[in-house]
Length: 152
Image (cartoon, rainbow, N blue to C red; front, side, top):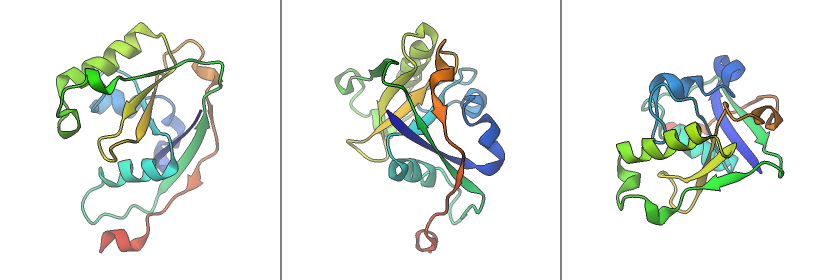
């Protein structure tokens, strides 16, 4: 499975570590739990990044990183029916519990979770503590820029 991440150039060294998610937590993980957030397309990664930018701030140091999960590694998927009705409107503790439990059980290298930004699309959580995580390949970072029209 192919995936994409967008981050600032200075964080590329730790792009596969889950350090940012460990420090700050996210929708699908608590502080202290390492998770690598990525998306199933570069376009979705761009939207997910854009909605988290400071208003009117157009970063000039972004990079995209493409990656691949080998077919031999299992990937789990969150069941939409198991989520609270308003899951996309909040960072509910129950969502963090889903991600935290998935990391702790260590059954799969990746977990597909629904995107709150684009309904019907899926993000990919990666577990850097998974025993075969080294088989997940991250390509060299490529410069990434948002179109200037997005910041008018």
